[in-house]
Structure formats: structure tokens, C-alpha cells
Image 1 (cartoon, each protein chain N blue to C red):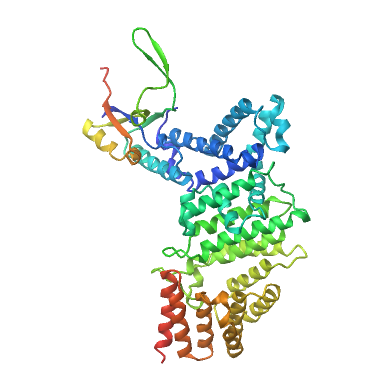
Image 2: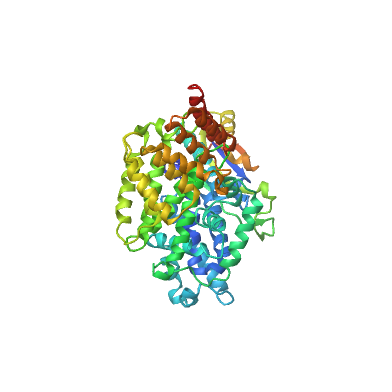
Length: 114
Length: 427
């Protein structure tokens, strides 16, 4: 098994004005996906991030408010999982509900330290 | 915040948590902000739910309701601190919110679990204003207490989203004139307001129980919401008002039979053919308990009588062993109180079952020209049943056919045609 990181961008979290039922229904899909990953032993551990923040950039360390990105490219969280291969990790990411609201998942192998 | 999905188990999220929390928090914040700031309360709650949607996707917090309360609380404190000078909050909380000394405690008290029932009770009394139509009152209840969106309410009532938005606009403009939520106490003067809430909840329940939706003859969620909100009235105020207990009893008795009313093909089953074994005995017991509580006051309202009728149906081991004379007596009292054609045809049907089909028939025929019954399929179905009990198969067949042409959904239509077919085969 190797470690992979999913980087989530966009999704329902950036969609304003969803109804309470729509939000709950969507959250349930995340719950089902997370539950399945855990059940199959992929040990998912994730962190969601709020909107806003600061970006520091360049030699001059220019600090600006907020991440600069199109909404759909805005990072909305990341999740570490265990998988046998990049193929398996990418396949598992197909089950994520983020695509319903036009989000994306970037699947990256974590560098091994020895 | 990091953790495995196993500890959070988001799949166990209560099915209606977001909607119900929306109702709870909107009521708590409107109590502080005042009905004229309803939109502000809604915005805070929407933001809290959106924050939860983002934060909970990998793992549920240990106490989702407390989590939401805290987010709403912090946002409310922030808004009050920033805007207290120019904004006018609820008249009865203005002073407490204006001072840092009492601000946090006041907000916490309104958001506390112990305030939940009282806040929502006051919110219901507030949105059932006499100058609004009953449809508008029900729409406001569904929006602000049940957390449904306009599109969802429109789908439930088979009308356009525009119609719902217009009702909400009308309702909001009335609420904007109000400085505080209605008080929760039940004095004589507030009795008419309580009546309006009970009527609105009954309407909501009926829309779910025998509504006019073409593809879904029963919408359980509307019935459940009516019962959930009625519980604020039966539990919230000094043991509850007798009429609220009567309505709750009525809803329990009706809802206990919901599983037997429709067969596997989605067709209504007449009472005679329903499998009484699938009726929910636990809910009937609850109904009986509420019926007992309802008898505490001196009052015998129409709701009491209707609950009594529903109770007789629940207690009967079979259609033949039903206490029809008791039911007929209750219908007589109900008709005295409210001489409506719909009650009259139901009374006639009870009369037929109580052993007097010919008397019932003349009652039913007399009602044929009532404008209120002209497009009412159940008039013709009841008349068909009365003809059948008077051994008049041809007439029964014709009446059921006529009922079928007036049916509002396929479940009704199939049920009437099936009854018609029974009497055709006997010709």
C-alpha cells in the first residue's frame, strides 16, 4: 500500500443558496463515499478548508487576501488515503460526489521517505 | 481537524437534520432579531448550513446540532456587535442585546435546547396572522419552520415556484410590521391565533394524507412535519391546549393506518379490504393518550369529534364490527357544529353502515346538487357505497364510474374503477 493525496477543488461548497434538503442529500453522498473508503481499508483522513485566507507570493513575500483562483479551481479540502497503485487511487476518486457540483479531484502520490 | 470516517459515520446523519435545524435556528434568531429582520436570521442560518456542508464532508462532528448552534451564535454576535447601533432588534430584547454585559448570555439562552420548543411555537403563532390566507400561513410554516425551499413547497402543492414566492412575499410584508415574536402563553385573546395554527397544521397534514398530487397519493413527509410541529403545541404550553391534543390524536389515528391504505400497485384500498394487522398500534396508543388529554378542558371542538370518529375506526377489529352507531352520533354532533356538505355525505355513509341504507340514500341524493360536491370524487364514491349497501348494484356501478372521472390521481381512479368492476360483475 502507498499513500496518496486527493486535492479537492470547487464543488457544492461554493454553490450558494442550496436548499437544506439539497445540502443534506449531498452531504450524505460524501458520507457514503467516505464510509466505503474506510470500510475497504483505505484509511481516509481529510481536512476541509474554509473560504478566504491569505496568499504569500514571490521574493518580496507579497501578502494578499484570499486565494487567487477561479471558483471552480479553489481548493476546498484534501484527503490522504492508502491505495495499492495510482490506478486504484484514481478509480476510488471516481466515487467522490464532488463532480455533481462541477468540482474536481487531483490524485497525487505522496513522496516516500525511505 | 482530521480524522477517519469511521468515527464520524456521516451515513447516520438524521434524514431531516438540515431542514429541522434550519427551522430551529431561524426561530431562535428571529426571536432576538425580531420578525422584521427575518431575512437576516435566514441569512445567518443559510451561512451556518453552508459552513457545515463544507466542514462535515470528511467527518461528522460529535454533536452536529451543537456545532450548528455555535456557528450561528458566533455569526449572530458578530452581526449584533457590528450593527447594533443602526439596527433595531426585537423590541423585547433590544436592551439586552445592546449591552455587552448581557449580549452573549441572551443569545445563548435563545439558542439553548431548552428554548427550542418555545421558540418554534412562538414562530408558528407569529406566521399564522389572521390577515393572511391559510395557504400563505401553511407556506410560511413550510418555509420557516420546516426548512423547505420555494421549489420544494411548489412541488408539494403542485403550483409554480412563482406562486409560492408571491405568498412568501405577502407573508414577509406582514411580518415586517411586527416588532417581536408572538408570546407563547395561551390566554383567551390568543385563542384565535392558536386556532389558526391548528387549522394550518391540519391543512398541511391533509395535503400529505389525502392530497391531490397526481403521482404520490400519500406524502408522508408532510404528515410527519404536521405532527412534529403539533408536538410543540401539546408539549410546549402548560400541558398543551385540549384542542391541540385533539388534533394530535386525530393525526395519530389517521397516520397509524397509512401503511394499509394503499396496495402494492399504489391503488387505494377501501376500508373493508385493508389489512388491519399492518396498522401501527404504537401510534394508536399515542393517539389514545392525546385523546385523553384533549378531554381535560370543558371544550368539545370539531377536532375532538373528528378524533373520536377516527378513534372508533382504529379500535374496530373489522369493518362489520365497527361501532357505527357511535360514529353516526359523532357525525350528527359534527354536522350540528358545521353543516357542510362534505360532513353530510360522510354522515350519510355512516348511516348506511349503521343499518339504515335507505335513509342514507335519501340523504345522499339530496346532496347531489350541492356545488361544493360537484367535483368531489368522494361524494360519488360514498353514494356508490350506499347504493351497494341498499342492494342497488347498477346505481353503485354508475356512481363509482362517475367518481373515477373526477379522480385527482391514478391511485384514486384505479380504486374507484375497481369498486365499479365489483358491481358490474353482479349485473
